[in-house]
Length: 44
Image (tube, rainbow, N blue to C red; front, top):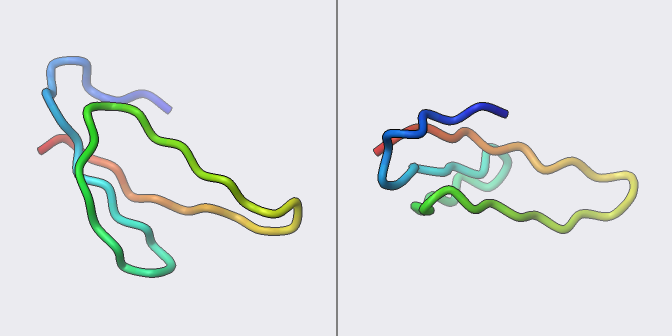
């Protein structure tokens, strides 16, 4: 994934749950072998 390098932070939305948060560029998810993590990410 390529994110704009000039952004200080990013808005993240978990597409499945609707949960939203911000990050400085780090994003980590742990899922079972048959599951999928799906996030929408964009500069703030």
